[in-house]
Image (cartoon, rainbow, N blue to C red; front, side, top):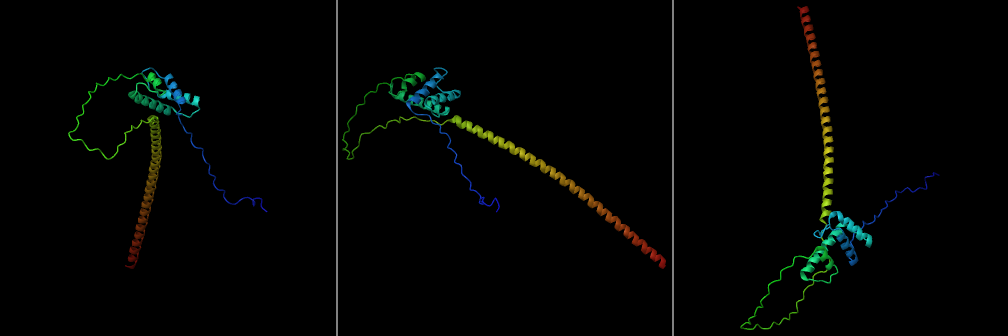
Length: 240
């Protein structure tokens, strides 16, 4: 009995490996995380007139939030959250001089008080003139109008800097692919030119050999014709 008879003869099926999902980058939306974000932003501002977060400081702010709250955040998420906080502060400040929002006073001190808007002129009450014929009462009841409250959630803005970085990387890869294609095309064209030159040499050599063979056959045929003519002349001379 052969020692390999007990081995399986069928080909093993391919084992599918399930890759782990990519890490999820999330900035916590709790008040503690937002306080940490505002503190890190305040510590890295260049001055009272500069309220934006530079690109070189976004990573430090994200690292501060991640170290305190054990989160997985990025500089782009922190920049978007700061932009959202400034936008909400502007909306709240336009409606109210003081707000119970926990970040209103802090952002007011960071961003600075906006220019005081002039008070609108007093509106003279308009005296309503009753119509000559009163309108009949409507039979359809109309309920009181309710004002829809403004959404209190945070607004997010897409990270255009990340999109620009991805576009630059894509263009760099496209340029590298075009360069490699040009090198391959140049090598193919060079090989084609060499092959055409070699074929032309072989054709010229074959034409030369063919012409020499044709001239040789022509000379031999002329010699044979001359011999036949001389033999005929000799036979005629003997006969005469």
